[in-house]
Image (cartoon, rainbow, N blue to C red; front, side, top):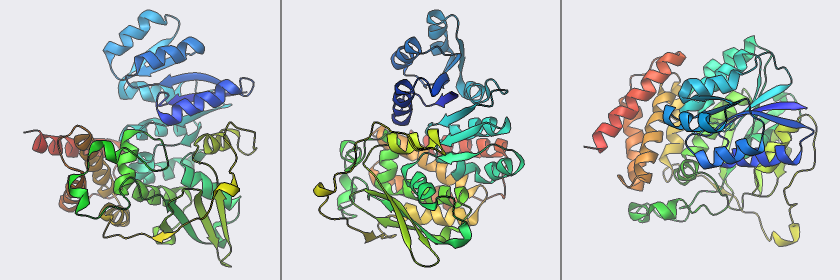
Length: 384
């Protein structure tokens, strides 16, 4: 039995992870969780599981949980997230699932890897912002990093332990998001509700908006470059409207292996949790008789300027990626709050990255300081 430490228990990935754990009680034991400020859901989870630690957003929420779960350690904030990630450092039969949203996921990933705890990663920002730090940790520790995102999990499966020397390209598919058929003119007046109506997947709000701008795909290219140690120019995004093929690997002999599956994150989650074995999971099999066609289109970088910006920021390196992510996080939040238009997201992020004087190989403290400064600056400008 493996112990599971779960960050982001009340999000989409977290809920599906708990479903798999509860369906396989002889294989997994949920030890500690975080859940931001979804107290009702956290109380429900903790009532069903014997947890050692729960992390929430703030001290007030922590006080509420302490009054209910007297035998469970209650922590809060960024330090609390690191506490969950590194709880019971001697626990060798364990892994951390990082399903947090945003830059807040970087420090807990570092905390887990530092005690040689394997990490199943669904937090893109860990590698977008701190990929160089994670590379150093993986090189000096025995812990492993396994991808939960459907695209990277698909590449992992398609590679099947083959040498990267035999790989020509990685091909990452993209649905195109909520507005894939809109012109730039039509994007001027889109609503929050329309932006959150993804054609294929049911996801959290931020990642759904990132899908619509294709920033999410830019993050995934950066993530893949670090995960598979490959030049970003050898990672090709392609529009695939059906989202049946999650990603492909083209080998040097031009053979291509693709991973196909339903729109269900329980498949990649289960694969990572049971690796190197495969086990039955709750997903429904594909019914090929209902799939009439699979479509593919080249990505228009003029249509999706944030995708091109993400590639450029990765190549520049250093703190440019921190600014890219920080500006995007706050811009998406402002859009969801109704304070800016959809196209303002692009303008804000492009402007922030353009103005930033980057520093190479920033430390964790420098990353945190830059992240906070960029977010504060943008909020102050748009909340006057």
